[in-house]
Length: 115
Image (cartoon, rainbow, N blue to C red; front, side, top):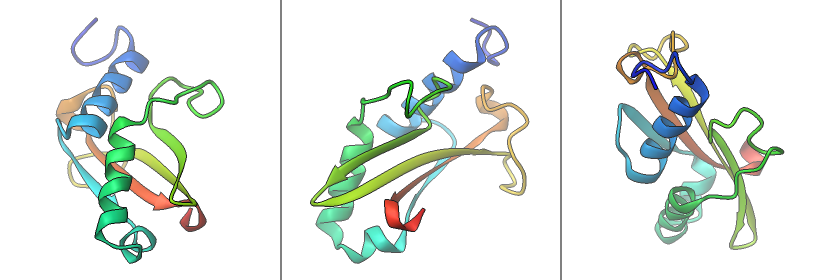
């Protein structure tokens, strides 16, 4: 595999997404929406842990194989997480999401009702 992701970009994006989502490794930010924060610190930390350990990717929720979206139920609430790819200025999309050197990942954790 080529390091900038040109040989197998989906596999490289998936790898970078999993590293950031699970371990916080890589250039990125994690955003917690107001709906999650309103549920309190314990709920917020449990949601973060659930996102880090999420592994229920299927063709239905991950059609591109990038591990960039997930949905789960916790404490009777439906939650979503999604990863978006920006350039380093956070003003535009990344020119190449498979290239960690030019991409800032933004992981957003939200209530489904906030989507």
